[in-house]
Length: 248
Image 1 (spheres, helix red, strand yellow):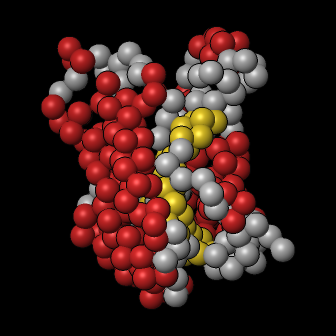
Image 2 (cartoon, rainbow, N blue to C red):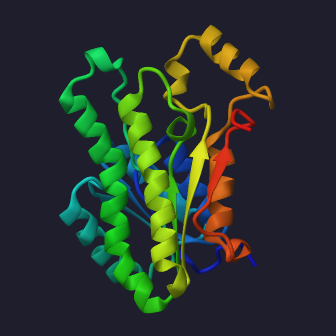
C-alpha cells in the first residue's frame, strides 16, 4: 500500500520547480493530484500527463491563487472533479528581489499578495469541506528566509514569515476538528531558477551548508508527503526545515 493511496491533493503553482517535484512525489505515493498553474500551459499539460502515467488521476487548473474568488472556484471545481480533497499544499509564490531603498510599493505588494494572501485564500476556501469531513492536512511552503531574513528580500522574507504565523494560528483553530496545518521551510534548493546563478556563487552556498550540497525539489517533496500521510497524524503547527542544516 502506497503512503497516500486514494487520497486527493491540491498543489498550487506546480508547473515547475519545487511545486512540480511535490506533485510528482505525491502521485508516486498513490495520490490523485489537482494542481494549478498561471503562465505555462505547455508545462502544465506535460506534468498532467507525467502524473497520469503513474496510474493516478491528474488535472491541471489555470488559476491564480492570489485571487480570492478564483481560489473559491478552484476548490469547488476540484471537489466536482475528484469528489474529495484530503490535502492542500500552498506552494504558489514569486520573488521580486531588491534592497529596500530601491524596492517599489508595487514590488512589495505583489510578493505579499502572491505568497501570503494566496495561502489565506486557499486555506479559507478548503476549510469548509475539511470541516465537513472532520479531517485534512494543510501544508504551507515557507522558507528559511522567513525565519532568518535575507538582505535584498525583505518582501519575500515578510511573506514567508507571515506564512509561519498563519500556519501556527490555523493549527490552533482547526486542530479540534482533526485538521492539521504545518509548514515546510526549504533552504537552498537547486532548481531551474538557481541554474541562472553564477557557479561560483552556487559553490559558496554549497560549502556553507553542513551537508555540503544544495537540496532538490525531491528533498522538499519527501517532507510534504510525510505531512500529507497518516504517518504524521499527531503533528500540527510545526515548521519542518529542509535546509541541509543551514539553520540549527
